[in-house]
Image 1 (cartoon, rainbow, N blue to C red):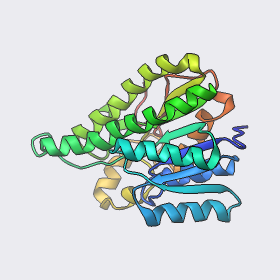
Image 2 (image 1 turned 45 degrees about the horizontal axis):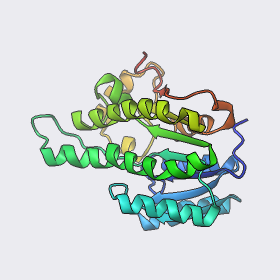
Image 3 (image 1 turned 180 degrees about the vertical axis):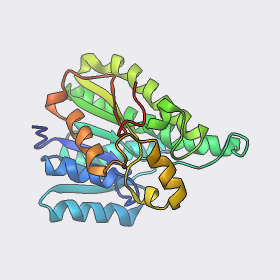
Image 4 (image 1 turned 180 degrees about the horizontal axis):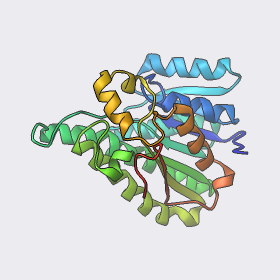
Length: 252
């Protein structure tokens, strides 16, 4: 199941230890994919590449600024040069900020959207030509439970709005490229057991857990497994969908 042997996958934001990108990359590599570790953090890129190679996988690292069209297109060129194709794009890179609407500035709003939505757009646009040419592609975008329930965990209204925009963008794109053999889907994680979660004070953490019927945060591997499914052949007839992974904190 979830066979990805010789598929070429890009995972943005996969150099950081704080989020889930590194686990996503390792999971895809375990299923046989060749990885591009794309991040703005040079040291983190190398750490992820080394971890994949130590486990017997194949990976290259590319320094990426998702807010730059030139950087996104350069990444694609480097992957095509190394592997000759691009099959999978996981748009994982994202940032957050805790702020009320009264506190946040237009600069705050712009910064969050530049990474979470516009950066996702630039990376997606850059891979469409090679995916269309080969008539195959899997694009998985990271949204958030905050997009659907209006926050309540991390970030502010600007974060929730940017992640809601990801859902709308993904559904529209799924319609545009379905005839080209490309699927576009989202995952919307809730609270996940990362360094960000571990940095919360106990009272805040207890309050968040109280709103999760399963009574615990998710593990990065649980998010990565869903993404591996959407990136696989088994998900060939799924497009324009989002998978909620939140322990029951939000149910449609």
